[in-house]
Length: 116
Image (cartoon, rainbow, N blue to C red; front, side):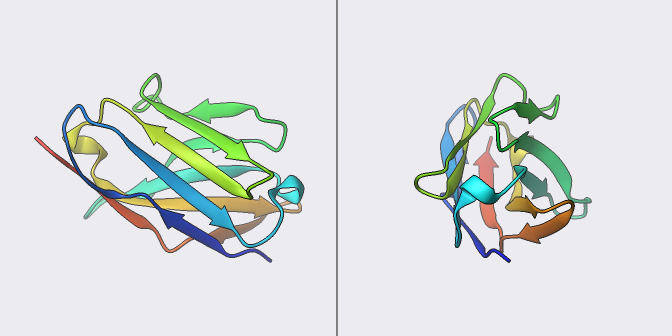
């Protein structure tokens, strides 16, 4: 089992940057895939980016070349660096961790609002 706590959200103008953090309650050395999802008002939650235990990263087309996911297993933390933010990036961002074969855990979310 793992608890995830996101932080770093806020209000930013279009073109700006934010860095989200996701702190895990246990060592992330033993956590397989970790990732970020987002949910905008009235829309379904969508996958944004993922990083494997080995460090392989993947991104949704909508954020590729703007967002960077990373993990620091010594700090038990996953990050999402978001650059060139757009109003359509406005959403609640959730951290996700997969333990074992397919047991998934979620954080409570952090709000990101991008003004035009």
